[in-house]
Length: 435
Ligand SMILES: *[C@@H]1O[C@H](CO)[C@@H](O)[C@H](O)[C@H]1NC(C)=O
Ligand SMILES: *[C@@H]1O[C@H](CO)[C@@H](O)[C@H](O)[C@H]1NC(C)=O
Ligand SMILES: *[C@@H]1O[C@H](CO)[C@@H](O)[C@H](O)[C@H]1NC(C)=O
Ligand SMILES: *[C@@H]1O[C@H](CO)[C@@H](O)[C@H](O)[C@H]1NC(C)=O
Ligand SMILES: *[C@@H]1O[C@H](CO)[C@@H](O)[C@H](O)[C@H]1NC(C)=O
Ligand SMILES: *[C@@H]1O[C@H](CO)[C@@H](O)[C@H](O)[C@H]1NC(C)=O
Ligand SMILES: *[C@@H]1O[C@H](CO)[C@@H](O)[C@H](O)[C@H]1NC(C)=O
Ligand SMILES: *[C@@H]1O[C@H](CO)[C@@H](O)[C@H](O)[C@H]1NC(C)=O
Ligand SMILES: *[C@@H]1O[C@H](CO)[C@@H](O)[C@H](O)[C@H]1NC(C)=O
Ligand SMILES: *[C@@H]1O[C@H](CO)[C@@H](O)[C@H](O)[C@H]1NC(C)=O
Ligand SMILES: *[C@@H]1O[C@H](CO)[C@@H](O)[C@H](O)[C@H]1NC(C)=O
Ligand SMILES: *[C@@H]1O[C@H](CO)[C@@H](O)[C@H](O)[C@H]1NC(C)=O
Image (cartoon, rainbow, N blue to C red):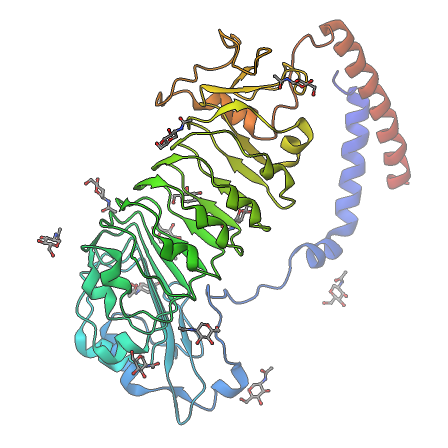
């Protein structure tokens, strides 16, 4: 189905004449003016005022001692990778935000340099494998945001606990050695966003948490024990990720008190008991992941009434009974996973057998038919290498199945006709364009 050579020549000739005549226009439409590379966090103050004041010389010296290039005033032209933000005070401006990333190996934090930087409100380290030092308490108390991603080698709970005025704390991919979260959070009364993930954090969830928390990500640690009731008292909580820990016990019946919750993952723990009915009272749930636990009982029907739900993952639990959803609910979701629940089945008058849910159809008693369909993966609990099939069927829930398709001849003829029609349209357009 190659275009005839004559057609190719025509096309080339036409293209050549177009480009040859339109070079000036193209040059000025396709290449936008090169704007100065902006730092990840642009300066908060405007440039007209910045000419009036420069960075406090003491802070400039501190930056220099940390190997941060200061040939250009960091308040006026922040370097892209270790971004700086200054306030607009006079006669000298002060540094309010400092982001260190990809630190060179000769960088070392010094107490005196950090002491000169105690106007900082926000400090972040990304890929900075420098040893942590004790922060001057002026700086520790001044910070409202602290972030450490794959940096500072390892941290202790007591070291973190000194940042008493934080509203945002992020520690990720950095081991934190502490007897428990309560050590870290004890004095952080203003905390709104808490992330300590991939940090090998041990101990229990604290019996007391600060009311203003709206974001909690403690995923991938070694936290043990039950979900304390204190957690269900967080009236502003929108995001909760406790996945991949060693949590157990039942999901508290008060879980539904978290009425502002949008995204929740309790995946890959050892939760047991049933999915609490109170969850039906949370109106804005978008993302629910309770997979890889030992939850039993039936699948609650209320999920299908949640208008905003996009992701529902209940796979690899011990849920039983008849799946209470219909096909249109599942189609509405971006992700639906239910496989790996051995005693769960679907009503084959509700779902066609083409739908791959990873569970067996029900017999007339509402029990899984055995043996499960040949195509379905083995749904034995705990087997780890059976996920690929659900993943396919879950995403977009099983449309686009190719089976008993039209014969190859029909397809070939169809493609042939389509390409001829396309060619004719193309030639007509081409002749207009060139003319
Ligand atoms: C091309 O650049 C000229 C001069 O710089 C300008 O006047 C004209 O508007 C530009 N054309 C387009 C399409 O942007
Ligand atoms: C720039 O800063 C000056 C002085 O601080 C202020 O008067 C002006 O409104 C600011 N302009 C903008 C666009 O923020
Ligand atoms: C850090 O270094 C890596 C590789 O050396 C590079 O890909 C990345 O863009 C750098 N990030 C920053 C913020 O400089
Ligand atoms: C800051 O960035 C520059 C170049 O991007 C780099 O040479 C320097 O080592 C960085 N300093 C720190 C402290 O990361
Ligand atoms: C930080 O908190 C302490 C008490 O924990 C308080 O005395 C101090 O004024 C606060 N500092 C700032 C800069 O907010
Ligand atoms: C957590 O501990 C495991 C094994 O003890 C180790 O392989 C892993 O690197 C640790 N993670 C971090 C972030 O230190
Ligand atoms: C963690 O802390 C405990 C007690 O505070 C200490 O004995 C242990 O050596 C620390 N481990 C590391 C790796 O720092
Ligand atoms: C919680 O947040 C509100 C509004 O953001 C604030 O007024 C209040 O002081 C905060 N409470 C605590 C304990 O920080
Ligand atoms: C929870 O955290 C895990 C690991 O950090 C991540 O893979 C998962 O997407 C998160 N879930 C939600 C609901 O954010
Ligand atoms: C569900 O799990 C709980 C806690 O493990 C147990 O007490 C209960 O008997 C189980 N229920 C069923 C129906 O298996
Ligand atoms: C919450 O979940 C939705 C759907 O998966 C996702 O698009 C959104 O980014 C999540 N929000 C956060 C804060 O992770
Ligand atoms: C399956 O659905 C049909 C029609 O909705 C209903 O009559 C039947 O009782 C259901 N079977 C089971 C086992 O729930």
